[in-house]
Image (cartoon, rainbow, N blue to C red):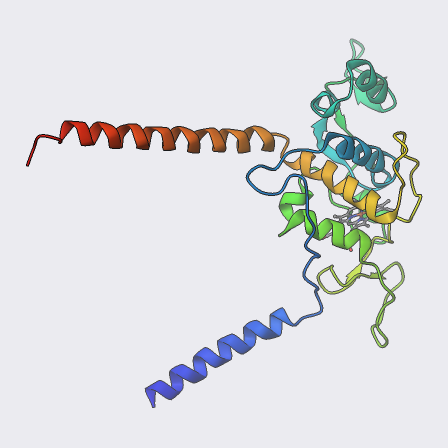
Length: 252
Ligand code: HEC
């Protein structure tokens, strides 16, 4: 009897699990990224293109408020380019000696601003949905890089019978299948300065490379340090093994 109860319990737990798994969320497409794996590195030209995509497309609705302009030097932008880019933005600073706030052009130490004054304003202009800051989005979602790529390239017509409210779009990679962001990327949405063909796939890849770097700029250092530590441990294991053999050679 006990055994039966246990089996029933296990089966129901497994069933509950499979019901969740069979929900309407698709698992992200499994892509290959230059930053994957222990030897993963950043593809700087891709990240630079991704920055262009963020700036020209996503920045209209999403902030990137943890990334200072000067950090772009790590992905190959010159100091002059960074100064020019920062100066394209306006920041409110102050107070000045008269106690007033004032506007000034951005400096390299400023961060990519949010397009909104606050979250309420963000929701008000987006049908009630808030476009999250993208600085850490790759880390904030499971399988982040694959997820964001799949989301950007995964828009489809809603299945028959699925009620979509105004301003909602069908995307099988979004939990619940409904997202308040219209497909932001089409072919030729941007014109790349390096001549790369701007297909939807390419643009999505590039912006994911950029967002991965934004979320974890120290990744390359972390990985190369990991490899060095493993090498160090390996060499010392050999040394200590040889030393142990020598020390205990005459002891029987
Ligand atoms: C016209 C405004 C707009 C633009 C442009 C836009 N987004 Fe969004 N985005 C939104 C809104 C609104 C949401 C919130 C959707 C929701 O919660 O249903 C969102 C949500 C997201 C999410 C989070 C989805 C989740 O899992 O919660 C990601 C990732 C995202 N956008 C990436 C991007 C990228 C990358 C770009 C540029 C290529 C971009 N967006 C351009 C409005 C925009």
